[in-house]
Length: 408
Image (cartoon, rainbow, N blue to C red):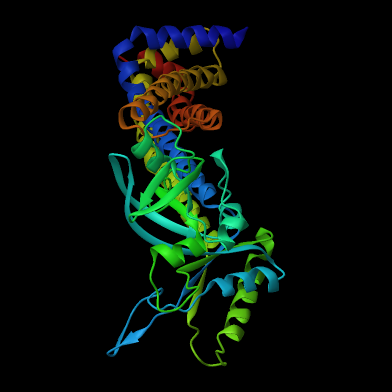
C-alpha cells in the first residue's frame, strides 16, 4: 500500500513537469531504440552468413592444384594441372575419414535455348558432388554414375539459369546448347542463394565430369580436374581427413619429404567459422556502441533529478516534518528515476522494433528481433534508473528538515 502511494506521488510529480520529464527520457529512448535496432541488424547479418555457410555444405575440404613456373614467374594456386579424376576416386576409397570426394572442372560459356541465351558458369562434376554440397534436385533427376561413365550429354540447371532461359516453364526434357553442343536438361537444382563471397550459386549449369572433360574443356592431359571437393564423415574427423588426403596425394604424385607439394588443401569449415565469429563480434560491437547513448541518458537523468531535489527542497522538508522518514524520501526519488527510465525504455523498444522493421523493408535487409534483446534492454533501462537515481535520492534523503523548511 505504501509503495502504491509512493508510485502515485511519483507519477504526479513527473506529470506536473511533462516536457522536462520527456526531455529527461529522451536519452534513454534513443539509447534503447539504437540498441534494439543495431542488435536486430547485426543478428540479421549473422543469420545471412549462417545461411550462406549452410548452403555450401558441412565438413568440406577443398583440394586445389598447385602453382606452375614459367619464365621465372610462378602462378598462384590452381595455375598447374596436377589433379585428376583418379586422385578424387583414390581419396574416396583410400581415406577412412572421407565420406565423399568429387572432382570438378569449371569453365564458362554461352547457353542457348531457342531464341533465349544466357552466359553462365559451367561445372563438370561427379555424381557425389551433390551429396557433398547437400544440393537436391527439385524437378527431374540428378546426374548418376551411368551419365558419368558414358560421358552423356545431360545437364542440371541452377534456378537462375532456368528462369532466364525458360521463365516459368519446366525445362526438364528440353534441349539446350552449351558452347554450341546440344545437351538434354534432366533436372532443376534447388535454390541455394548467394555464397559467402557474394556469388550467385544458382547461376550455374552442371554436367557429368567426363562430359565436360571430353567436350567442353580442352586439356593436354586426360582426366584433369580444376579442384576436388571432399566431405569428411564428421566435424571431428575434418583435420584427420585433411592429413589423410595430403599423405595420399604426396604418395600418388611421388613427392618426397622436403619438397613442396603440387597441391594445397583448404578446410572450408574453419574459414567459414571465422567469418561467422566475425559477424557475431560485429553485432556485439554495434550493440556496445549503441549502449554508450544509454550511459549518456543515465547521466542526464541524474542531472535532472539533482535539479528536482533542489527545486523540491521545501516539499521534502514538509514531508519530513509531518513524519516521513529518510527511507521514504529515498524511495520516492528512486521511484521517480526508475519510472522515467522504464517508461523511456518502453518507448525506446517500440521505436527500435519499428526502426528495424523499416530498415528491413526499405533496404531489403533481414533483421531479427529477439525477445531476449528486448528483455535485456528493458531490464538495463531499469538498472540505469537505479544506478543514476541513487545519488540524487540519497542527497534528498540526507537533507536536514529544518534547513529544508527554511529553503526558498
